[in-house]
Image (cartoon, rainbow, N blue to C red; front, side, top):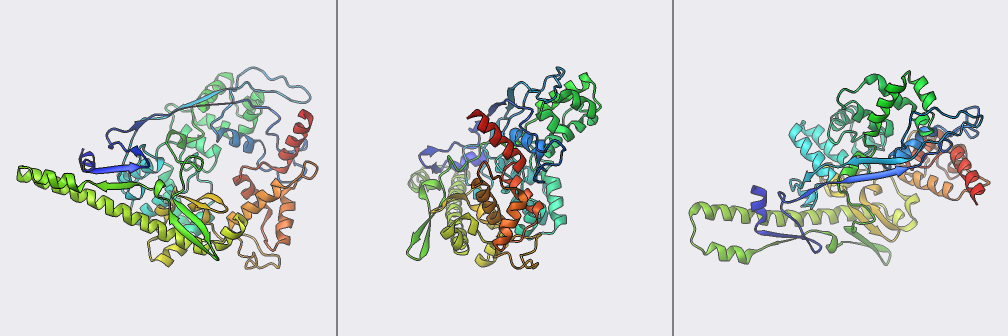
Length: 486
């Protein structure tokens, strides 16, 4: 009620949309997705199980992860398989339903200003407020809220996070332990199996013995139910129950919430070339405009009223003025941060994502003499429009490439490559491959080595999987199937 009364003297407009008071806003989401799964789609190895290129580590699990992470789960029935010599069983497709929950908007965090619908970030921060962790842990948790992707997963590895936030691994471990216990269940999972496991253990009357099913999602993706029952040591009834439990889980825990995307959100920051330099400005159409109705206040102040009423009105007007000033200060901070980022990433703006240089939050915080958590909140969920395209502002931050030596054996000779820049190069190499020349992870390692970037094969595989690109074995098989269809 107090928040609604505060807003009574403030007209808040985002574009031309009038924002409702916190008590008026609610949203519910009903998501429905379906997929038809083929038994042969996920097979990530050759007949001897080794794979011809040696980069089929993701295998069937990567295929199922890619399917379920988009809200799809095939309907696994308990009919016996037709085990022919080609083992080409197929599962029937069904709708995967997950119902969202009603939410209320919040305006507690000024960096988020006022949103029409409660965002996932709002919801997570409110839970952290209730838990009241100690200051250092709270700052790390708040920073990590901006790292999860649109599905609610934390895809970056611990080393990259620790380097970017300049924190110790033990502190990150404590933060993740706290964050993974928040709602919605499955949030901050590292992969599909982890996400389903976090949710499964919260189910009422769940049977821990059935969790072994999560270790064999590859068989489920291929519809090998008889084989699945055998390796999991579950009878038909137990497997049926486990599959029903599995189907009740949400592979995209963040999908219950409204989140702005590059396709629908207007970029807050605009970058344009100005001769040999870059001009950085804020997009007024994408920022909240706050107007304090001073004339209405002056007219109302002239009316007879009790001292208590006058103090109440004066207090609300002061709150409205504070909100307007705070929003203006937030815009100034956003512009300063954007300018510092653009100055640091000049090569990226000129040559594209491949030229993205290593840059962590701490660097910008030191340049602007601001706290690192302020930088983290400023860049979270912000878009920047550049001549190279529209990007999430946080994507311009990337840790330096580590864990591999340069071409001469020295870690210092990676040409200033960032992890994001190497990922962009890997994507470009795979995009340029032809059906008769599929590039393997080993070939990527050699190509990067020739460009002065020393990186281990396992790192290439990790980066490729983070880009949702299947192994060369699966890509080669897909090309063969595509050729037959054509």
